[in-house]
Length: 174
Image (cartoon, rainbow, N blue to C red; front, top):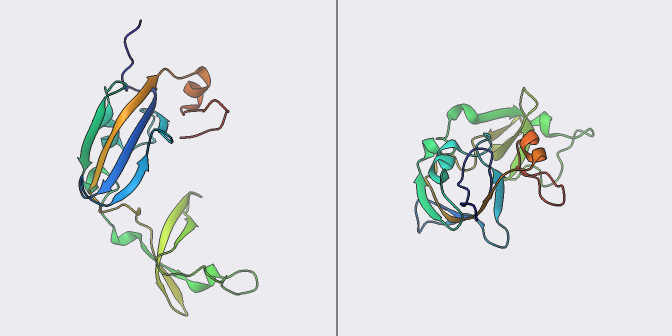
């Protein structure tokens, strides 16, 4: 029997995890369990680099727990990401604002200058402009991760070419 593979660049990793705000007993932000594990290709720039460094070299069956400071996770909130946009940009072709669009705390998707989608939270609005926060939703948070590696395998040729995990049904994922 061959030795189990370790988490390394271009390996397909299946794992469970929980992420909590502030520490091991903080509020649960997200959970991926054995029924819905997280599967991804390691080392292709899709995950937080500091997160990948913490699980690098682990084998199937090994657990992990670690904390990431904001600067190693999603950064600290940046005042430059507080945006003020003219209210008319939120109006439809009938010059109306769709009911339920402008709700404090709700996220809307904007398109940046490069055509990339950016999520922004509505902070407030008036008759002239809408103020939005385009910082990542987890910016400024210290994140505590815990979980276990379920499986590590070599990628298929197609996965290597596309640099991402492809499930058995052919559906593309990160």
